[in-house]
Amino acid sequence: MSESVILEELKEGVLTLTLNRPERKNAVTREMMALMNATLRRAADDPAVRAIVLTGAGKDFCAGGDMQAIAGVAQPGGQAPGAAALSQEQVLRHGADTAMLLHRMGKPTLAVINGVAAGGGLALAAACDIRMCGASARFTFAYPKIGLSGDFGASYLLEKLLGTSRAREFCLLSPLIGAEEALRLNLVNRVCADADLHGLGAELAAQLARSATFALGCVKRNLNAAAELSVDEAIDVEIATFAACKATDEHRQAAMAFAAKRVKTS
Image 1: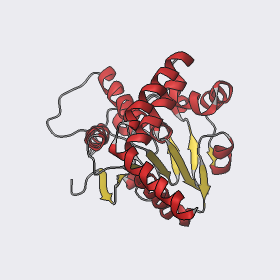
Image 2: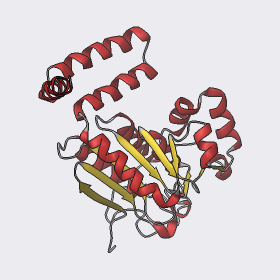
Image 3: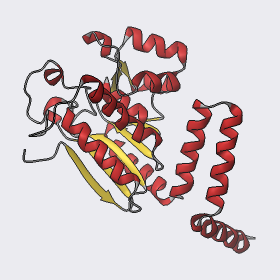
């Protein structure tokens, strides 16, 4: 294969990962998930990476799983040469782990959604902290249309984003919805003109990368705790992360800069 199915670009603290199978609407293969999983794990520990952008090459974000690969048809890029056979459960757990890396890693993640986001592609977008899309973007759960129930943590993520009632309607009926409806449902945070999408996405990612990375990671941890734990347990996490932030050079430098700015403007 002449070009990777996941493109990586690191610029000024922002790591942009581009799903790169535009001829297949960036449909997900096992190789793509293996590369993304390894890249996200590496990025999580790389101090040069301060924010992560996930997007798709060409006209679409990601149309979900590659149906030819799912059906067992040999597909270029579907499996790395010499790769060991994995059970269905191992493959599914690996995909869910990749989505949860986006959801839980200690750095902000941003989905910049062009065109179609369906099935597993929708789940990857939902796993990101912030989602923005172009005006022509379209979204669908998709799984029931091919006789499947969901993977990549899609059910968990969509229930958190949409709420129980709307998640059930969206997932059971699996409509194809546009950008404005996705915004109304809380599936995305922002909608912009298609022509402005990548530029505005880069600006937002740069803003995140300029912020206090460790503190943002702790904010994510607090919010995940709030969603998953009891109130008392979530408060314990919040107290622990506050203490951890307070002990960092990142906090001390930011506090001194803030104090100096107040003195200067007073």
